[in-house]
Image (cartoon, rainbow, N blue to C red; front, side, top):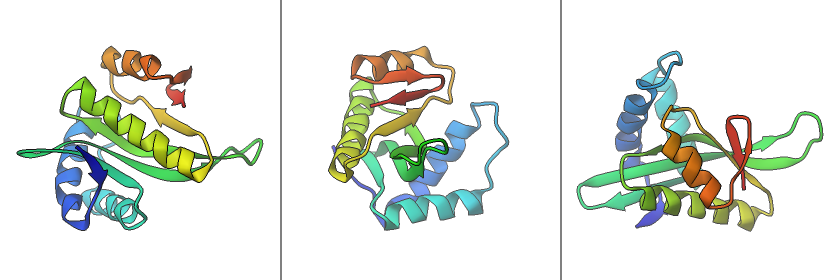
Length: 136
């Protein structure tokens, strides 16, 4: 089930995000900074979770962004992770697309891991690749 993240979800999202970041070649995030980012997304109703028995299977945190060259607004992810099935990732992306559609702006999700299944899934559900981003 996909739902809006709640304040009680901040710590489980943080733990999963830190584990996900440990698998990609970026500077390790500072837990205090990551916690503040997650809490901000939750407070703004811009964090979604794939909830299932036993905990959170995945999550996406969104933020409003502006194209530097055109000034056009879009919604993009601050994090996306999925420890569940491809079906749960698909549901998370669809829910994020709904948020963007409700706001009347496009959605762009980044791919930061090396798993090619995520790129295939994003393409299958209508994402158009733009380098490491997918536009919906």
